[in-house]
Image (cartoon, rainbow over all chains, first blue to last red; front, side):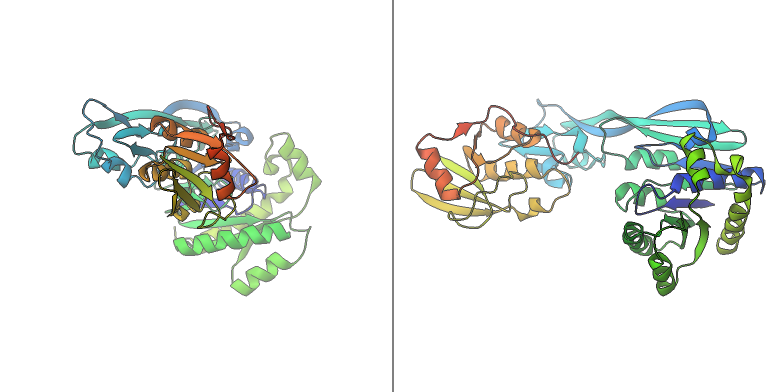
Length: 283
Length: 120
């Protein structure tokens, strides 16, 4: 079973929820858990879980390589490319590997066989453990913009028969869609502020288009205003977690520690979350 | 020889658009017979990536030997250079004024891209 923790707005507490939920599920509910950190531009779940890395694997993207002797300059490669990653001007082909999404269309389209696959490294997938929790995270190469294939590689470690928690990147664009796609449930974490509400409504639109069951969790729930709750009421979206504004949580977070390890009275919140998740997701 | 000028509108009295890849139009001016045509570039105006590359292909296909614009990024410049198209820089004027400045030899030529790409 795959549960994605996502949000429109960044910094709302996805990682806090994902890591503590994983901890709760393993230590208290005795479930088999994997935490897949798909925020590959800035993975940090492993820091909170003090993961031990067991294996590092390169992730590559196939990009076109041109044999100029075979190229006839017909331009079919450039016509098929939806990403402007290959240009044909005056019979001369130029490739832009950093724009390539690795679909392989140009190689199929080339009638002269002048294009072949070349490997471009976009990042690594690190697999490890934190006690009995399996941890996987992607590390995008610095300066790289093509994160969806790496997110796909991280998600390929999700296994049946265990709970896979997917910590999604923020926003509502391709990397997020790649992270939440195919999940059984999405928990959208937000904060009760105008920014939180605006970005939550965008995220709600996204998960509705994708047809995924979802609910909302409100972090720092004692600040801001009532607009997020009002919105959820009007849209009939269940709120299944509320974590209050608490200096102690911020303090633990800044030291890279889990809330549940240092502030055990929050256990009840995660127990409730677990029970509600069990209700909405058929196991 | 033809000049392609990035433009905010469809005729030579429109303001020059300082953006190359995201310019909505290019005014193509033929120096030999003093005529103007307009290329619609709105497809690239909205494209998520590679606007500079596509725009460069557009002006090359229109037969331009010179591009007049405000800013050119690295990839667009690479395509223009590979096609032997010269890049001249202008800003804060109409398309017509830019063409006249070019005729008088008052526009500077860019030897490299003058800005970094926006898409990263």
